[in-house]
Image (cartoon, rainbow, N blue to C red; front, top):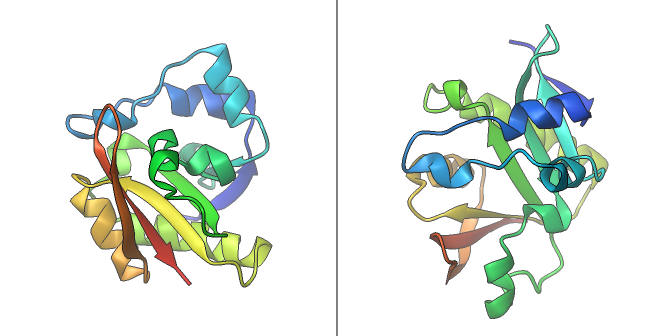
Length: 156
């Protein structure tokens, strides 16, 4: 499958916001409303599409990639580029994560060279944590939110 980066459009945002993950990953389900659409259209989100221009995932950078509860413990004080990712539910757990995440990292390195990266992940999401470790990310800070426990992971 060929991956391509796409400007986030309203149609892509609506598609992504309707994705539904099974428990316990349902934490990553979003609400489809005008506020969520506006956030995805704020130029910090990018779609990842296949050769048929079907949305298979997305990523965001900056404040949109942070979990607000992390601010209470200064989880985001160090200068880093924060990354958030979403993969279409029917593609998760099928060995596609490395290809998908590698594509995103290559794009971020190309557009933000020499800036260390950080991401935030729920501690129960062992699949994602293993994937991030495979790409050189290491655990930094742990914190609780109202819905789950999270860790930040960084890569130089």
